[in-house]
Image: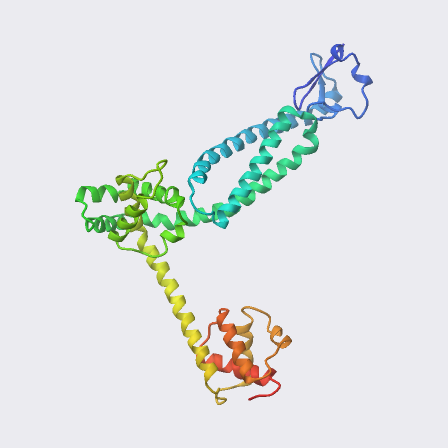
Length: 366
C-alpha cells in the first residue's frame, strides 16, 4: 500500500486507509480538498520516476503560488480589519446624513467585507465549493478594491499636495503671529504653531468635526483667527461624551484653520470671480434681449465661426436646426437660455449670435 501527497494543498491519499488502489481511481478523480488533478500528486516516501519528476515541476510552482496567495490574503484581511477599526467608530458617531461619496465608500466596503467572509468560510469549512466559487469571489474582491482605491486615493493625494504647503516655516510663522492677536502668550503661540500641533489639528478636523457636518460647510470661506476660535469653541460645546474636544484640541484645530485660511481665500476669490463673470454675461444677455440688434457689425463668415465656437461647447450645432427659432424674439430667448446654462460671451458676441440665428433659422425676421 502506498501513500500519495497533493503538492498543492498537502492532502495525503493513503491506499491502506481508503481501501482502494491509486491506479484504480477514475481518470477524472480530483483532490477532495483543493480540486487538484491526479498529476499533482507524488508518491510519499518513494523515489519519483522521471515522469513523476517532470510532472512535479508544475505542482511545486503551484505550491509556491498557493503560499503567496495565502500570504497576500492574510495581509489583505489585516488591512481590512485595520480600516474597519478606523471607520466603525466614525460611522457610529456621525450625526448627519452621509454624503454621496461616503455612501459609495460604505457600499463598496461592505461588499468587499461580505465577499471576504464568504471566501474565508469556503476555504476553511466548505472546501468542495472552493473550485466553483472562490475564483469568482477573488475576482469580485479585486474589482471592488480597485474601484475603492480609484475613488479614494487620488483625492487623498491632492489633499496631501495641497496641505503640504500649510506646514512651511513661513506659514507657521504667520500662524504664530496671528495667534498672538487672540490673547495667547508667546510660548503658547509657538507651541500651537509647531508642526506637530498643526498636524494634530488637521486630524481633529478630519475625524471629529465631520461628526456633525460636512467639511465643505466648515471650509466654505476664510475667517479671522478670532472668528475661527469662536467657531471652534461653539462646535466644541456640541461634541459628544464619546469624543470631547478639550481646550488644547480646540487651539490645535484653530491654529490649523488659521494656517488653511490663505488657500480658502484663493478658492473664495476664484468663486467670486466666476460669479462676477456669470453676472456680467447675464447682464449682457438682458441688454441684448431688450434692445434692437444693430446689423452694422455683422459679417456672415465671422458670425458662423462664432456660432460654431460658442454653441459647440455644450452641444452639436446641428441641434439648433432641429428646433430652430422662428423669429428674432425666439432667437433672443434661445441665446438667453444658453447664457443660463453656462455660455460666456460679451454683449457684442451675443448680439452677433442673435443676428446669426435670426438670419439663418428664423422663418420671418422682425
